Length: 141
Image 1 (cartoon, one colour):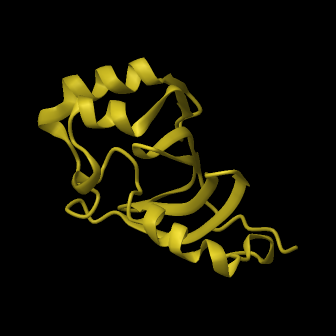
Image 2 (tube, helix red, strand yellow; image 1 turned 30 degrees about the horizontal axis):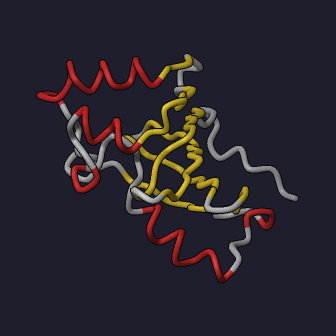
């Protein structure tokens, strides 16, 4: 459930619908499975923090895509579920998208900063954080 602080403004609902279809990033064949597609989808200075806490550069992600293309995981085929989406405008054409990802029982909170450009949507930053084993860690506001 979305806490009260993530109430979605009505004018952001169409953008939320567009972006939620693109998640989880790098695991949706509709929006890319090749290194070239991932390159177009990420800003030149893209980086991320994985659920492990490790930081990954764009170069690392692109190399992973090149090496792993035969092992591409389609989130839908794998049975991964996304839920509890929230969105916040950060600036002109820049948005923070948040959600929960369930990968067969491994639950993580996800945050992606998206920017709309002339060439379409691109990712500026992404982070995953494992939800504690005790369950949902949402603190009431």
